[in-house]
Image 1 (cartoon, rainbow, N blue to C red):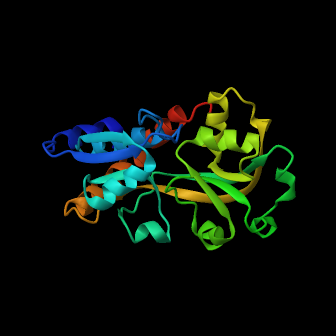
Image 2 (image 1 turned 90 degrees about the vertical axis):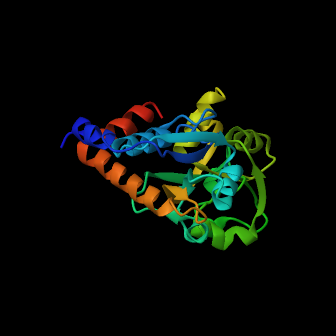
Length: 241
């Protein structure tokens, strides 16, 4: 079945009940200040393929998680699926995409650190407020002196001025933000990989409709992959990133 054929069938279903989601404002090219990017493209297309309308509000990531947990919305993205988040949210089976993240250091310092074992205790690590950084990071977090901020650009500026010793950023997000700041890729040192996040829509445990919304999203994402629309959206959204 073609994507358009699947879409035609889906649109015959009722769209009277929409899915209310939230996303963050500081994770381009996945979700920018207006909520635009690959994540929104995929979620919107997946629900459209099964005949559901989506409304998306944009806010800082910390508020995204709070809104989902409180049941103020049906769900939100871009949430990393790991041990800590599986206790807080309901997830479907289909991942939106996977995103690799790395440690970044001030120029000249990256070569000194090859793994977590090389990182000294009390190293100053810059992170985004309420972001998840994988189970390995959680096991080591007690050793570090964390500095949490709300914007990717802050992490880069803090690295360059020496206010922090390291930062963890998603690779494509770091590259995008450096360009936005009119900085070259060698303005900071890219270090060793931290983790690869499987990115999902997280649904509220306080809403009875969450299970159905998750199943519909899974169905829509499978349709996008089967018809080739998924790869088209990925290539279009990440072109040049």
